[in-house]
Image 1: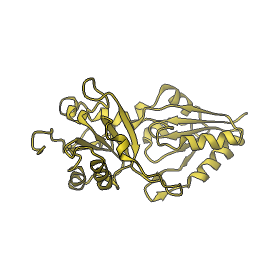
Image 2: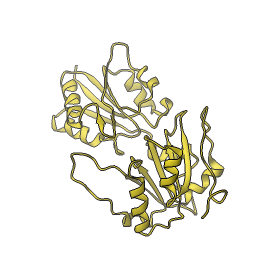
Image 3: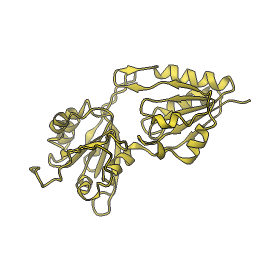
Length: 263
């Protein structure tokens, strides 16, 4: 049997946010190579006897370096296996899916990209924040706050993002003070509404709101850790009215701007 790799976006946090196609392919997989933030319920959907390979990463701790993940996919597909590479969010939104697809393409092996619900849009939505809203935000940008190890350093030119209404920052927890400082230095007003959402779209979701200037201190006070997404822009104000998701045991520190926040 000819092997093939399927790079599948599992969506953000919740098992039931995977696409129908992604779930169908997972249920037929012979090998599942999966990341750290994959919902455990999804792994139970793999066939009995399927090989499950954990390759999760977190800051400063990688189960396998990316080069070995690429080699693993190539080896299993060459062996004629049906391989599902299960990735959080969408494979092509800061998921290194492009690198893995290139490795397969350069090896002359078949693959398919199965898009997923990206956390950059879904997690703010679970916190009641639309990344665009008529009359408030006509565009948004998704930015990484993390410098990839082993890759040439690319400094973010925050001036480029100064006039984009909504900024969504992934992997920015450890650099939040630098990010806030650099954005304000680039001209973003210090009183711009800002939010951090930890463990979005799960029963552990927790959010804290502040301003761009006070968000780093709010991080410390609330104990925000990874995984967390940062949203900066006027759309954050809408969370007071649109915060629809109340997971069991949530202890959100959400305080509407203007009620307890000095502007």
